[in-house]
Length: 323
Image 1 (cartoon, one colour):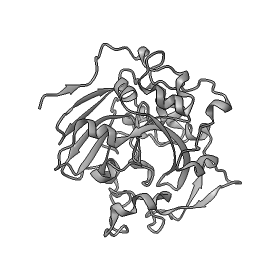
Image 2 (cartoon, one colour):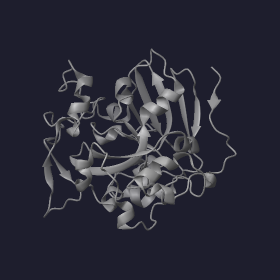
Image 3 (cartoon, one colour):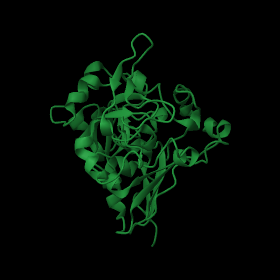
Image 4 (cartoon, helix red, strand yellow):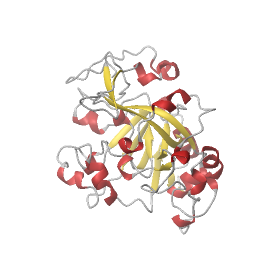
């Protein structure tokens, strides 16, 4: 099959979508195909945004009850796992700025009828962006509530027409040793690039999001710029960052943490408070911000609170074994 490219590579990032149009929910959605000033069509990370501008309109959002529980922006962008930049939670915020994200392309292949590449400009202009507030639960028993900006992964996959025999979707993160200091110091532990995978029905589920921003702003590098996966009913390591390659396959793909520690990190990684991690309980979590004197400890919910929407995907499976 001939490889297809869906945009003119001579288009400059500076010609894409005006920044101010993305500060309001309805303007954000209407402006997805507009053209003008900034690369992502969202305010630059670190830019000043007023409290009024950061307020989102949740009147028609099915998850609007989470609006009052949102984790502060500073906590979301300063406490991260992104081992390409170091193993400490503060390492990504300190070092991820070294990663260059312009230009950026995502290659899609494997068992699809139309393999090819999309430039970042296509992703921002070719799909309807929306804001969703999702719980985010890390296997290390900390959690956040984050307002993401993005589009359903199903919209992206459908553009490349997966074949009927495609049962899984594999993802790969950017691997650039010169810019990712963690791949040099941590390189003997993980087989880079970082890899993740979903079953096809999980990938096509309407909750599964390709995020390009958060809190109405451009996605910061430490949070997986310029685009990352968000699968809210799974532990955070399934939400792969800085994606450069997506492949549809008929076999369950090998994933980074599963290859490293299969006893601790199963392929499905569904949030399940009844199944403890080998080294700690998963029955409770620390909702950030949290401290020694104010631990903000809450009970962990099955499927991270999304059981009504996704439990049917796993009917008949033993989730204590297929973890």
